[in-house]
Amino acid sequence: MSTAMGMRLVHNLSHPTDLIIDLAAGPHLARAIIAARRRSHLHDLRKAGWGTEPATLIVTGWPAEETTTPVEFLKRCRNSLLPGGCVAVLLPHDAVAPVDVVIAAKQAGLAYLQHIVATDRPLRPGQRIELDIHTDVLILTRSARDEGGSDAA
Image (tube, rainbow, N blue to C red):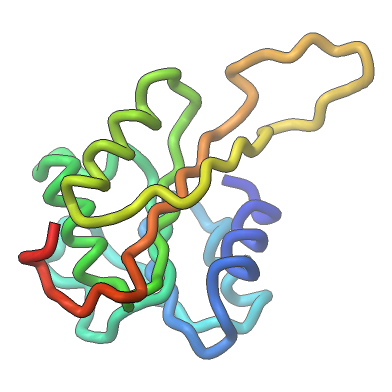
């Protein structure tokens, strides 16, 4: 993920007082969070808890963890979100992966909101488009009407 993509996610999906959980690899999201003056927690995916304060935005790479199923991981994300909060899932381009993530998200009680295609390098006029130059970013959300805990799905 580029710093520009991190800035877009932070500015579009959070407010200045909101908490952001950074599960993404690399420093780009952290730089965007600092530049936007947001609050964040950088977490180790292997730890049992991500803190007690719910977040408005969680940004994670995919696949997220080898020790849990995609549905279990997304349930954990859902339970760490405020109602109306979002999970941004960063995927290297793969024609099937976005569908698998959306299915797992639905099973975890999250709804599909948006699919962003982020190019890794700028296209030049006349350049042929290559599918391996972008990252898919899926935005999943926890319903604003959802007041339940981990039992909702």
